[in-house]
Length: 485
Ligand code: GLN
Image 1 (spheres, protein in one colour):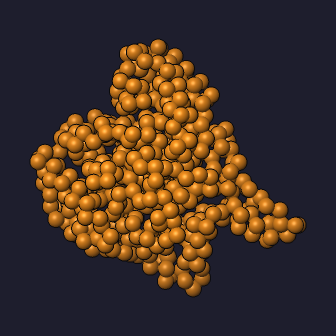
Image 2 (cartoon, helix red, strand yellow):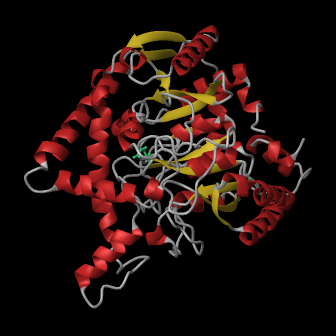
Image 3 (cartoon, rainbow, N blue to C red):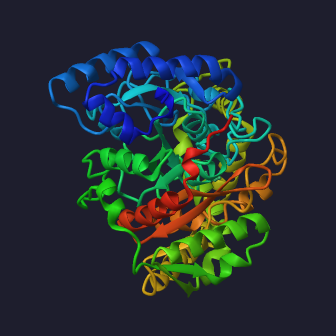
């Protein structure tokens, strides 16, 4: 078998038996990035030298008998996570030359586990978008069909894993940015429970919604990465002190007796491609054959979720992005001696159109006289959405629905139509608003050969149940064996 076809789990076993070396594995992937990434555009920065040094260190660690499941495994990181000494752009001109002096906690934990970081992955600017077309630097193409987007905002992460440029990757998910690109690229993506993974060093978009999470080609690979990055971090006061289970060990427990909630409202969702609807129904039927039971549930307030999110997320973003003022970080455009002119030019030229749109919307929603009508109201409706899930989870152990209403769309197809793009976040946004975990797992391919993802949502801090279900489905379908040509 070729090295880039290995899963993290399999590569880890071969490394620990010393049948392959970490240096050899890193070289194989760096070679693929060089050969294939010009056609995909997943990487913004490749850190070949650092990767080879980390791989050599991993080989020494393995020789010393001190290896864990990620030691020597080549991974890559969305360019919204700070990497010490390596530029972190957030896909934005305003941070084009920003070199953080520290690692994000998730990155630091991967390094401590012995992972080999190959580089930084493309994204929509400041993670705002669903197609990776909002990057200031490059378009990322979907490995299954290069005329299509990989989804977003973690499109570089999903495309890199699908194209076998790395064995796994980290992304961030504020309203679907891990799950939706995972669905479009035929890989597994996990949005952990809010607080499960430290946000320290994750450049903030909407702080009450943001979570860091993994991409893998299999559920086990995602679980191994999640276990490495999860857990309390004193540097992030919102990180939870909950015990971190052995996620990968939970996978083998099967799904017998688990109740899968099917939300009535999601079936009739507007814009749902019938092919996706059928794929999800078949996936649930498969899980039922394996011993799970489908039960009807109701999430009556999720029809407001998109509206609520597109008030709360821009409001928090407008506040978080105030720090890019030409003084503290990154780009500064001279203002001819005028402070205000310097601010205006820096922010006008440094931010792209989507980020500017969000700042304008968010600032408006937070302004005196409108705060109660927009931000206050959205926060109230958010509580109703949280309660919907609490009620639903009294009747089921997980909820199944599509990840995205359609398979991957064409590059440019929706670029001029932000509202259509926002509406397509309908299935992913509720989990962020409620802070619950969710996974996207490949469940079918469309007639056109495009991957379709099933989304499973779980109770807070119960990633294990949704990962078990995803793993069971994956085992039945075997779709992870398919690869883009
Ligand atoms: N598509 C959503 C947005 O544009 C979600 C982005 C994300 O999760 N970072 O805001």
